[in-house]
Image (tube, rainbow, N blue to C red; front, side, top):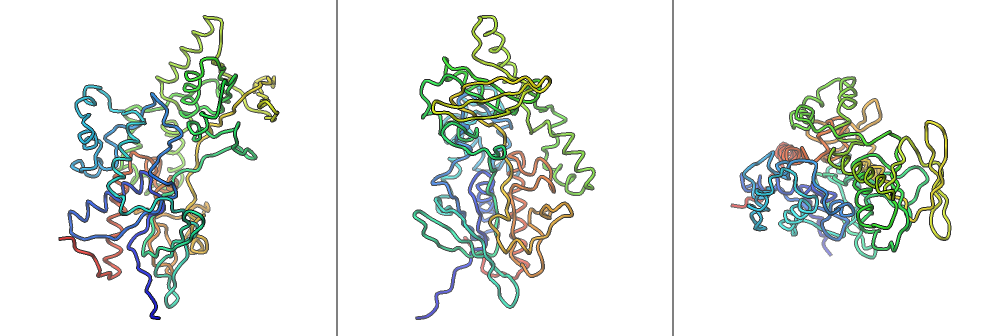
Length: 436
């Protein structure tokens, strides 16, 4: 029988969260503008679109303006903007009358789902990427085979000239801690809560926005339960979202950061960590303090703030957890019987090399050991690897704070699409599918 040649895509995207959704939009808009179609497929291990579903808490709002959606910063006239979504949902005037720049997190998630429905023919949900292997021709790696697991373990392969890795963030738990029915990471909150009946006490560890939101939500949802917030600071730190500080999230700041010496990059990260890490919106801090104080006045304290403290020990029993908290200034220890312990201890970017396997040996590194990533978000590679491997996320060390966040998603996606089109053109690829 004749050998059936494996079809080759121009691009395979791993993950279909906001970053690669924005990329899919930028690809479609480029096709409409130029008539040139870049053949792309996206692989997502979730069964449907979802973005931090476990933290879609009622009453929580986005921390960025709706104008920093999937498209507006790159193309204000896009049909995929948040305003077009509002028009499609029949809520344009209602949103305007709401007089806010910050939609609820639930509404913004609905916007993302709405945008994702336009790309159902390009996304393969329920497809977990388990390996990426090079395809070598005459000693040069010309393509990559992306190995996918579906359902009961069925494996298949997609071959591509270029790869965009956007696997999102991995939840961080302290060393040795494993999530189970009583110990959770905050990202699991809404998935786990239905299993809790008549809780007496929650313990929440962490001092950032997620920790404060979890504390607020549990205190309101379970009016008979005590909620203990444990963190090593004396108080929650206010997020710096002032107008001048927000310039660190401008798209131009990516160029400034990328070109800066390493010593300057380190200083900029230190200066502006308070815009994004272990910080909380002032309104939420004030609300938690108001409740904490009011309960003291009433003589029934359900919301307890154990500041300047750390978890010293966690023991499991038949009826729950035995949590030991140490007050750092004196070393005094308090033992709490708890039903659930929630670690709101943040996330780390997924490591692209986890999927790349042997292909990663051809990726260049900086003196620090981190991946060398070019300005167009392509991993620098040896001359033997001709495929383009791009990353969305895991670029803070080279491109700065804004490069990994929603603030720059629209612009970043456009830059990657331009880079992809240029590489395909320079490689002599002459199979653009003209749509008109």
